[in-house]
Length: 495
Figure (cartoon, rainbow, N blue to C red):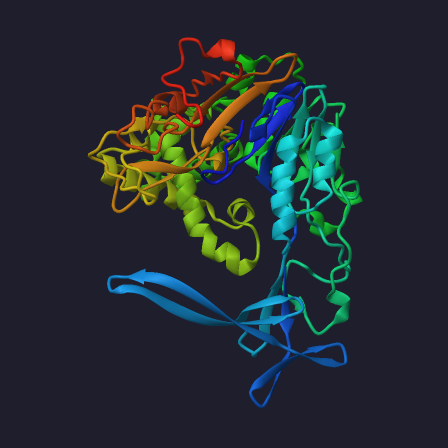
């Protein structure tokens, strides 16, 4: 299952002949998710000013910094106005900032707009693995990995499509010395030199914005075979969940694949709830948190780690996890380690329990009780066609059972409060979901968040909202014979 790119794009999977959609024609389909491939680098430039001109050091040279003027028109109450910017560049790229010791920072990334447009267009014409792979040789799908399937039964994984070769002695996760010619990019890794899978023995492929090292279970690419800059991602709870529903399965149908895609398990909590329970059990009875959290702990101990609109444990668990991350975030960044690692290794039992206490207090304050069902909190709402939606607790909304993908939900619904709302509303995650079966004819089921129309007056502005909220995908009509009884009007050019 995947979201499209109308909202934040989250992960997807393909396996066997069934393909989870981002784009397809009658013969082939593909999807993209954002990877942790390093296709962008920043450079520390040593700047020298001579008169009113700037130069930068490169080896034993002093090269001129180029300057250009960009004019941006904008609308005001009194009419159009214009803002002028001077942009400085080295051969690495534009200057985007400076350090405290007066080093200028340039950024280097793919700058091939025509080739990128060409690749985006020509892949829509690809009908098989060979022709799709040819489009990948343009190397302008710069930050995405791609999962592909065709009507011949091929499935494939392509990693980030723009990966310059680099000297491994440098730490490319940080700005490198722009004056050192050793930090120059080499040629791009070819498609075959990048992580690539074609018809793996596992029989399935997936990605959920995680690293490629688990893309096909035991048939996955091996991290040790590639330079470190090829991918700096890690396994996610969502990735672990995807593997569980995919491995050892050979008999998916459209409907059973949809069922798997909406499996309600939340793997993030299976390790951390027992730690929380243990922390509470080891807390002295004299500590006020012991009594205050007793009911919450008992409920979480009995929880099956599954979301639903009626689940109270989902509410308390998600609010607790978010509170943990808020508390751990600044310290983790200061320590230079991932937030999750900081939570697992650095947070004391007392702080873990304090986070649960704070989560309980917030639920009680906002909803009258911490024993509030998840569906009362987690909502889908579409009232207007405004780009910045005016979410309102007093307006109609729909309960959604699935959670953010952060907790391992394959159906991802990233929600938060807006402008003082108590309820949380989804604005990222799955936006368009489809399951496609290739064969002599194409069959697919799909659903769109809200509806196909952007006009609030249209009956199709929100007519898929309920389907979206429960994963009730509709049949997709590909052929004229399927349209009988389902056509409101027809349009012919010239009419």
